[in-house]
Length: 164
Image 1 (cartoon, rainbow, N blue to C red):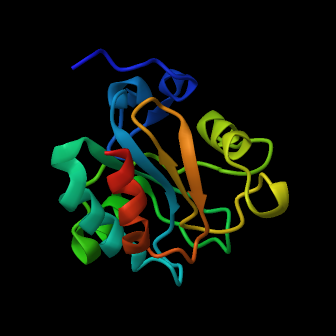
Image 2 (image 1 turned 45 degrees about the horizontal axis):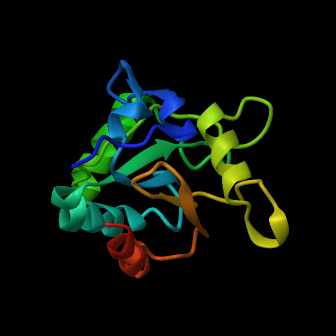
């Protein structure tokens, strides 16, 4: 297997939910599904579908990266330990979860600034509209698709398989 291509997405780092910082370069050569999450949202049950995708494809080089965000209706008010406990207890989440971030505005995490420019939403809008917006990144580190909050994780499986 050839060495993974270095892409701009691999230059970002993010704090993990359990503490410490992680380079997205650690995921070079993998297919990624990056999702802004929330614990008290109508879409919160998507955690189950995200975990199912992770379990189904992780052995083939797939990762789900969850980024809690409290910018939409204050639906992620908890601290890191509360978020981690909720995700594990209610949905068995085992995919990597990162510290709570902003995805819009002046304090948006640089990763999300990049993702929004790389894959604008409807009518070219860059803003994230709600929790559980999803970005699919190919093995080369390029954003290949953006999915709205209402897009159920299981409907993304075919796109993931094409990239694997």
